[in-house]
Figure (cartoon, rainbow, N blue to C red):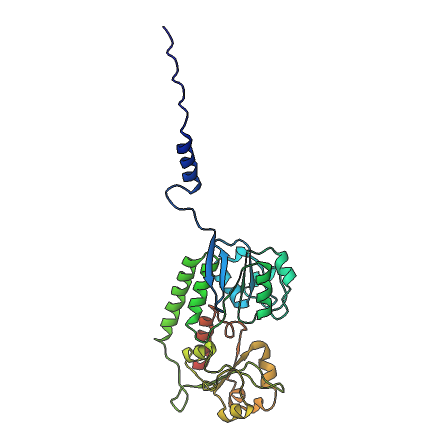
Length: 303
């Protein structure tokens, strides 16, 4: 039987071949994923960042805590000396303090994104810009509600927007539940007067005024901040002694020193044992643990 000749392969039209290769390079019918994103940070700076960062340096304890809460900690390659929560963060290389950042150390970590907070100065920001490393500033804001915005912003930066939305939903649920709870009020049927100790002693007295998220936390816990009419952080000793708050909130590590120092040891809250030692970071940073601080304060002021 005669063997039929094999049909020769027809050459592909070079124009068609070019279109096929271009189509494949573009990822088929869907457009290829963007490699960069453009954001405007809290200082109004327009920053081009990688759409999917792989090496992130955090220059803020609040940012570090939120990154862990979002499950993006595998991206962290650097932190500050003050980024101590959660404990696992201590395994991340440090780049120094906040006011004395080691820029060379930051660059040696080869980050593709740096996220800073409220305490990083303009000088460090300008240096990072000059080095070509994208740096986005997410600062703490006066109102408690802004915490949700910060979580969403950081979620976008590290590719965890869905996780940010889930975390915010959980926090809002816990915060809304607070509205259905009551707190035992003081003898004069008014909200208990509360004072938060930021600084004390010979260097001056400092607290959180009414234009701070800490003021919101005190209100959500069922108290009245005696410094709510103050803008900023300075507070006079005379005003503190005159107001004589029902409860005093102080960092746990400072509690014993405060209670043993004159004239603070004459305040009613000290004499009655109404000094509430709070874990650092739960109250003075704008982080998810703020909800835990509110619940803890409510419990202590209800005893």
